[in-house]
Length: 413
Picture 1 (cartoon, rainbow, N blue to C red):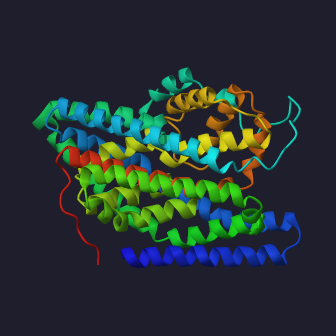
Picture 2 (tube, rainbow, N blue to C red):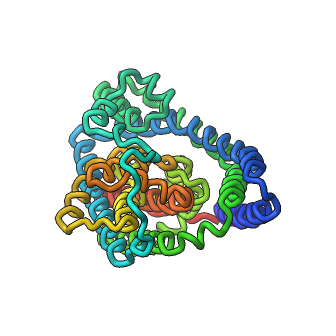
């Protein structure tokens, strides 16, 4: 099914571009466009809700069992430490590359926009982001609440405690461990059913976006879009090179295995939508279940490489648009701040806007400048969501290799 699925998704994207362009050209009224695109969005929203329905029980079941199957807590600590070490290095590479590319290309330097009034409206509130709030948010008040709200990071915290307890109880909890493992297999089967609707959801998402914005929005922001996607390509190459250092030539074999989740993330602009498929494909690549079930959900909270790069790129683009020069020391400070504040971003569309708003306020850049990137944010989110998935796939494969748990892959027909 793998190659057919990829073909269906690509065809759905092309048909969506064509249908959206036709509707945009034929329908003059913006109100009518918004109304019609709303109907298409219903399909996409329903699909994303189906995906979110799967994620919480899937993360809990696979992660709890994976930890319970580990030989001892030292093994758990080693895997966690190695994962976080990789995440920090990958984040540093992402932020630095974004910083270098936006300075070289300078996509906002030709806009020469006047500074807006001090009380101009912003697109997101920076006050929602603080270290204190993040630390409080890290620990769930209730497991049921975390499951209901699909809070991946909170589910991870609870699952770690639960899995360690299962492992410590050994044979006394063996039946419960087996039962939860069966739950994970059931949820993966449910994932297969949900994925049958993916091409339809992709078509609806692309059609709605192009219908509202038109292809012209890509031309008007060509330098910004082109520069950012070029930076993403370079980031992909950098992550590929980093992966090659640890798993050698097998990193090239990883690409065909993850093309489906990457395409899904790109077309829906949501890393979260690709989570179940990513977990499945990493297993086929040879990553052991105990490693993928631990590293992947952790990566969805701490290793969003595409979104991390976007934070530096978009912030400096807005500064350039207003003619605000940030010294090298200020840019380094921004990089270090983003190393912290970008962690815990949800793998859902537009979550990075809150982080960018915080950076704008901190460095005296007009927060209203966030409106500059909103017009093309969905297109940009497609690229960074796909990059998030790719980065987490490389990270999981590398950690598995470190642990000696990267087995032979299973070639799809």
